[in-house]
Image (cartoon, rainbow, N blue to C red; front, side):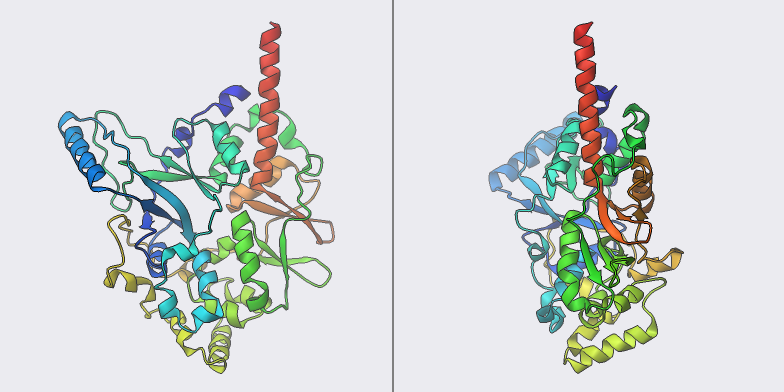
Length: 415
């Protein structure tokens, strides 16, 4: 059973997933990415590099015509590759730099490539016929999102959704750590007793590689660097007091639900005030006034436009023709991000915590129910001792399933 589970094709995990929206790495700007994210229900937009030649374009057109006539699939290889992903956190961190806050209009016209980590390998392409074990191995090697072609029915011409983009004659979807964990959770009974063991006994608690900031620290000096690092590790930033007790968190997932107006807040507020700014139903009026006053004191009035809903920054790129035909036609979506807060009854800044004696399956349920890829580990008195990540959970499952496969093979050989 373990061998069968690890051998499942990743295409099974892609059933029902939406097709990716995309931007062109050679033509799109930061403003294009901001507009796409604010008009989308997805947290990430994919960025693609396409090297089209006249000869290849002619071959693709001929293949498409033949496919339309014969009812078959297009068979010509293209050279489009997904080279990265962009989320609201990338934009907020970029805009919160002092040089960009001084002139956000110019900053937003920067190429979208400035938001993509160089050589990070966070995005990997994977064939839909690849196995679940192949996907887990790529995640454990550092990939965050796997790009999988969406399968189409044979003898039918695939009709793409209006909000997606065709690359290499396919639509694609993301496959994430959460998708794989959820799939394994649905087959938890096949993995033996390990999920019921305490996380401390499974050596899953990372006591060194996590990020913290002090409640009273200035956000401008304490936050942008660690937020970027936590985004790269798909974790969060714990907010602690002087005794090391957890007071909350500022997570990439929270900032992904905000908009560009958070950038001036990061530049002017303390960590504690920033937690209040992004909490509950939106920023309190007194904090909005405080941010505006401090920006004016620093002669950064231009950045006040980021806090103006009518600034039009996020849609300016479409007017100047910077979008390309590789870009997606995004849906109507929502025009602003703070509107999402009103539907949530818990505090955004509350961290998800467990204890060293919590079982793996309990921690897994916490992560999946909160849709995060980490859970903080605290002692009885609330002191932070470490973190458990989705990567750590996948490593345990991969090792356990591999051991079971070997045991099954040895048993069958002895028979």
